[in-house]
Amino acid sequence: MSYLDDIAWNSDGLVPAIAQDAVTGRILMMAWMNPEALQLSVEEKRAVYWSRSRQKLWRKGEESGHVQLIKELRLDCDNDVIVLQIEQLGGIACHTGRESCFYRVLEDEQWRSVDPVIKDPKDIYR
Amino acid sequence: MSYLDDIAWNSDGLVPAIAQDAVTGRILMMAWMNPEALQLSVEEKRAVYWSRSRQKLWRKGEESGHVQLIKELRLDCDNDVIVLQIEQLGGIACHTGRESCFYRVLEDEQWRSVDPVIKDPKDIYR
Figure 1: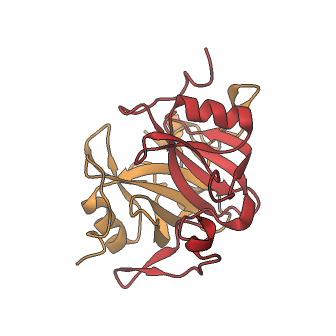
Figure 2: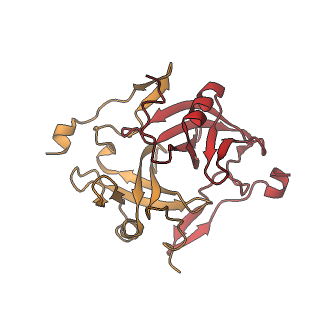
């Protein structure tokens, strides 16, 4: 039995993976992993996801340099969600150039952007 | 346009919702919401999820008393994940009687329980 066999993969063979800043505790993003992505993440100690839109492995930071170094991996009670405690290189997890993908807050029944763009995406993805 | 229309609901009409302790930053659990669950969560300022196993609305804490009071709601860049900043009544989010559902850490390629049971589930669910 491998630690991969303990996961309750969904009908697409994926599990959600939440990336949290290991120091500040900020939730930076949620993405998906298949078994190969999780195994590579463990072996390489950096986050490797499965891109559902591109249908391929996605080594986080491969284009942007915004690699996520894994400090700790946790599994939930139902075996169907993973939390990654990470160090976010460059301090930017979101493709919009923000620290976190969760930059919109519900206020007066509207989602309002409240976090600054740290780096223009044009300068991240060339 | 309602804030509900901004969500990219998945093919089952659901969105993942991550509950994070608003004070400590600890990630407590991830569950799912349908539009009704999200609307009720906003209106009642407490977490209401959609139980996929029971196929019904699940007012978190309705049996256990472990209600989650919502302090803030955030949406991610892809409109398909929500983060709830919450106050966890009773200090227990997990049905195993632990603070967080993420009580297992990957060590030596095994998922090891590292967090204590705060209250016996037999005493939580009578």
